[in-house]
Amino acid sequence: MTYDVIVVGGGPAGSTAATVVAMRGHRVLLLEKETFPRYQIGESLLPSTVHGLCGLLGVADEVERAGFTLKRGGTFRWGSNPEPWQFSFAMSPRVPEPQSTAFQVERSRFDEILLRNAAANGVEVRENCMVREVLQEGDRCTGVRYVDADGTTHTAQARHVVDASGNTSRIHRTLGDRIQSDFFRNLAVFGYFAGGARLPEPQRGNIFCAAFDAGWIWYIPLRDDLTSVGAVVSPELRSLVQGDPREAWTNLIAACPEVAALLEGVPTATEPPYDQVRVRKDYSYWKEKFWTPGMVLVGDAACFVDPVLSSGVHLATYGALLAARSINSSLDGELAEQTAFAEFESRYRHEYSLFYKFLISFYDMHRDENSYFWSAKKLTEVDAAETAAFAELVGGLASGDMRAELRTAAADLGRSVEELAVATDGTNPLYASRVVGETFQEGRNLQDEALHGPAADDRGSGLVVSKDGLSWERS
Image (tube, rainbow, N blue to C red; front, top):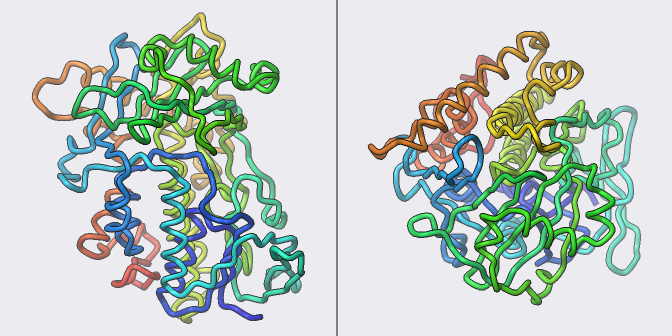
């Protein structure tokens, strides 16, 4: 069979790419190795996903009706202040109510909404199909070979293949190595409780992130009777975590007083799939290249960054949207393939780099000289090799310039958080911080696009988003 596009993976990135291409009338096949609904971690969303991306895909109302826990911001026990502090999305003048909220979601339900929406938009969705091989003609990807639920092998051809198959993807070997971050080389052990105390209103639905000696813990209220709790620790604890994950998870929670207090007397969840304790290498990375002729990488197949800012679904779907716009521009003959995908890669790398820089600054805020984890998370411990790799990621800035930029960003963020802790006038000093403003700018742009249509933003490339939001056009 021949298609315009084959998408490998039915998570948020794959569903987004497939839907946006299908909305332009192109023929799309989506292959998903599992059967939905299926379990996935990454449950805390940002407003840009809820009000921006979901609005562009046409599922905002359905997500609103799903009954997910409302999230107004985040609460942190992090930095020099011993008391928890919080920020509200509504404190930004650019994001007024009701666009200033997000959701804590059960990913099995959220992801299925996006996948079924792809099918409703004309995507041919085939679940329980495992892609075994990418077809090549010369240096170009031309399709895939996959195995269906009955064990039958099929071959499908396409002008473009989108790899959205996640962090374990093995089908993109032609796109160079994966650049690993030593600074964010962490390990996560996580599970669920059948309830748990909630923060006082209006922060009841906030994600709560608490730093402690061994790392930090997330606390996400999914339902009144379900809370996601995970500890992010140094990989040096691998033997402890992998030896008995549940015992390690329990002991790490007990070592963080702020989180332990919220779970006092609360039993662990027994409802599948929330009855398991899981371990994941929480390593941050990016691929050397995000595209090659006939193939483009999105989501965790392309890059992943530490989850403390809840940026995972945003980065995945944002990258997928960029890829779909470039695919549409190429398929429609509006732009040469090289031009279209250079725009995709430039914008995607830039967005990833902003969150990466923010996160280095955020980690640097928490100082604990006696903790192995936190002493290794000082800005001074970002080695020259990683700084050089990061400079290359964002477009060739000299390592010395990048190190100075990271120091400036860390100092700026630290000052803003200190001001936030004592702010009494309803304003949020965080939004006056340059690093915060830059990091969340594109998310705000997505929300504006969903509400008012694309604005003229050519990034100096001469390209802007088309009026329907589905491709690029010349400015």
